[in-house]
Image 1 (cartoon, one colour):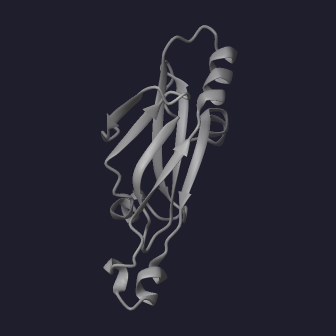
Image 2 (image 1 turned 45 degrees about the horizontal axis):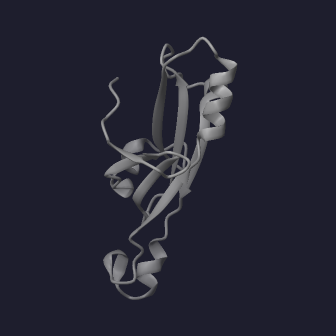
Length: 138
């Protein structure tokens, strides 16, 4: 289970969070075929700018939404990938944030995301590993 704690509810720009698990021997490829094969989950957060403004407090008022928890259960997808690639011992987990509008760059939503960490949980919730976020290297 991949859990995103305190995902900000965006005020202006909607965004997606895609989770990929793929063999460590591969480099991430921004192609439809790679995405279809290795995407194991997607979460969307949609802009709610009217929530705070409608209450007359602007987007930072007391009634503006703060954040939510979102989870992606990757267990079955990982099992299927491991079974289909029995010679692969190491895997990468990649989390990609993207704007809902495909014509907008990540920079247009960066301030809307505000995520501080991602937690990996065993399916039985017996343990949790919190991963600090690090930027992908070009």
